[in-house]
Image 1 (spheres, rainbow over the protein chains, first blue to last red):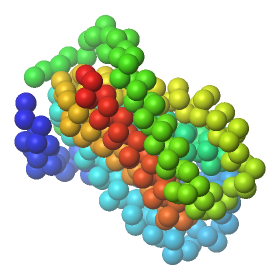
Image 2: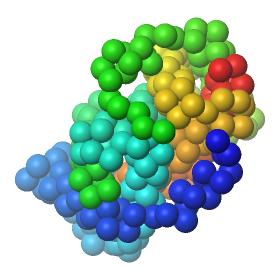
Image 3: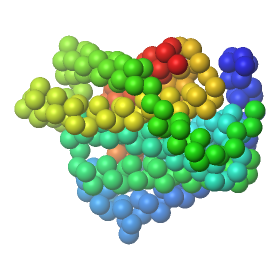
Image 4: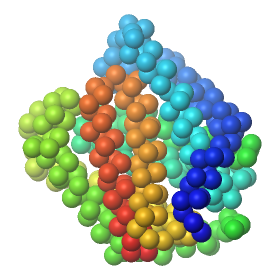
Length: 143
Length: 147
C-alpha cells in the first residue's frame, strides 16, 4: 500500500453530496443546541457574553467560518470511512463517534487547565460528539 | 480490502494494548506540554489570555491536573490511535505521524469553531490548537514507529 498515493486519492475523490449534507446536518444541530431555549442562554452566561455580542462582527465571523471548517471536517470523516470501507450508516456512525471522542478528550485537557466551568465543557463537548456522530451517520447513508 | 465489523475483532483492537509504545507516547505528549506551556515559551501569554491568576496555575495545581486527568486521557487517545493504525494496516513512523496529524486537525478545527463562537482571542486558539496538533502528531509518530 503506497501511503502517498492513498492520501492523494482521498483528496482527489471528495464525496460532495455526502459532505455537504453532513455539513448542513451539523449546522442544524448547532442551531438547535445553541438555541436560547436549549443550551444557548446557559452557554452565553458561562462564556461571559452579552446578548448584544451575538449581533457583533465577531459573531458574524464565527458563522462565516463555521461552514467551511465543518465541510473540511466532513470530508475528512468521509475519507476515513472510505479508507476503512465503512460505507454503512452504522459503521460510519462509529467512525464519527470515535473521532468525536478524540476531540472531546483534548477539549477536556484544555478546559481543565484553563479552569473553565464543567457545565460549559458539557455543552461544548456534547455538541461536538453529537455533531460528529451525526455527520458520520449522514456520510454513511449517502456514501 | 474489505473489513467487516466483527465485534470480537473490535474488542481485540482495544484490549491488545501496546503498553510500551502507548506509555512512551503519553510521556512524549506530556513533555511537549511542559515545554509548550513553560513560562518562557507560551505559558505567560496563555495565562494572560485565559484570564488565569498566578496562584491558579501553581505547580501543584498543574501536577494534579496532569496526573489525574491528562495522563489517563492521553492514554485512551494512544490506545485509540493504535487501534486506528492497526485497522488501516499502517506501519512505520511516517504513517503514524500522518494519522496523528490528521487527528490533530480534527481537534484543531473543532476548537476553532468553539473558540470563534466563544469570541476568544486568536492567539489563544493558536497556542491551544498548536499544542493539540504537535502533541498528537508526536504521539502518532512514536506509536507508528514502534508498531
